[in-house]
Length: 219
Image 1 (cartoon, rainbow, N blue to C red):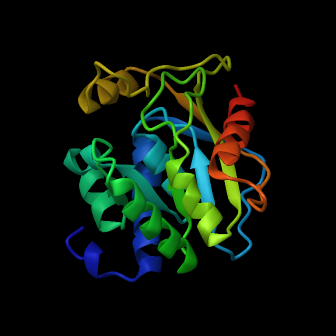
Image 2 (image 1 turned 135 degrees about the horizontal axis):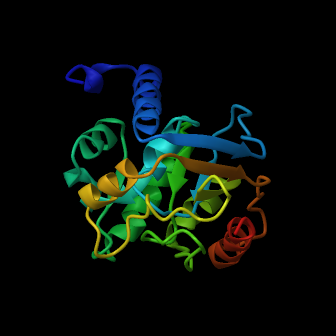
Image 3 (image 1 turned 60 degrees about the horizontal axis):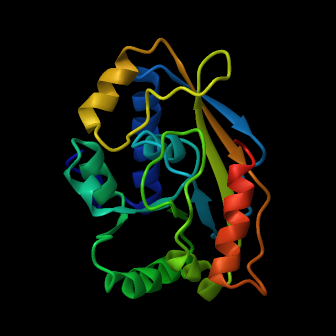
């Protein structure tokens, strides 16, 4: 862990992926993948709904990606340290003035060949529906002229009913969700990849509506 900041980008992701897989196994979370992860060598913006801090190791176990995340995550045990060293772009959502500079930074990272993962709900949900999307940071995909990959995340029980144990919602702490997961025999983390979206002729609000519709369709 001490050497992590000095590793190459590729080795950082290999270590992050290995760590993420261990986290999921220790929490008895089994992955179920639907659709196709479009890894065609070109950088993309990945957009997903957001239910839990578990979403981070879940997606890190599947794709080489840089996250845009709220600044509070920096304070989380271990996960915050790993996220920081892995190059996560943090945003203080209470400061509207940061939106333009962060959007520029995301655009630059995409142009440098990095995949960025964005949770446009701006918060976490219980996991049985998708909250409205904030369109601001989607401007980065339009500016970078990259494609956008919508991804739906659901946590399910063995009978395919929603499992709320991972939900990191208001009133619960990081440790509360960890305890809830520890009491659960097994959680199925379903990740559904939708078709890539070409942003040509779309403004960010239209893109937000289209992405919301695609991701909500899984629910």
